[in-house]
Amino acid sequence: MREITIPISPETIRELHTGDTVVLTGVLATGRDAVHKWMIDTFIRKTREPTGDDLEVYEAIQPIFKESLIYHCGPVVSGLDTGDYKFVAAGPTTSIREEPYQSEVMHHFNMRGVIGKGGMGANTLQACQDLPAAYFHAIGGAATLIAESVEEVIGVYKLDFGVPEAIWVLKVNRFPVVVTMDSHGNSIHEDVERTSLEKLKALIEG
Image (cartoon, rainbow, N blue to C red; front, side, top):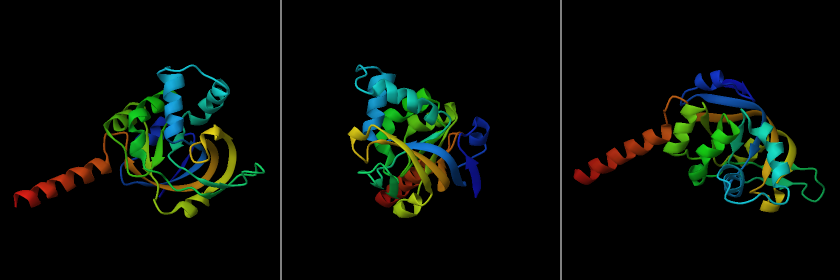
């Protein structure tokens, strides 16, 4: 098991290959559907004008995401009434929903990758090669266990999106993941899909 500290260098990412088990330590942030669409519309494709605290949040998250990771996660959080936030559960959500946005978001913020569940598609895989970056698969069904690796909730942005959709900035210690898409164009998810289709075809033809 390899220990990696965030921010992550391009050289470290290039050393990783699909199947590698990794523990991550450092600062990362969550982001799901609402956050990705907000990033794309407001700052990348610029189809809407910034409003409210948009510019302030954008300035704050740029250094957080640079050479770091975005975690597809809709957490359960305690302390909402006091601001003393604690992650009760922090399991990954299905990543493929962000495929229309992920490559552009990764490039824009110079990210080193994504943490999520279930893998992503061709555009994200290409971004992993270009940047370089990697897709880290977190263990589905282990939300409480993963929450234990969250040492501190440093802050939260866009809480008006709702607790699951907000940008939660986290300090994590030994967050366990597996590399399933690497910077060399390899994807375990693609391999599984291709093998499954071949077996299905053989069953139909047989």
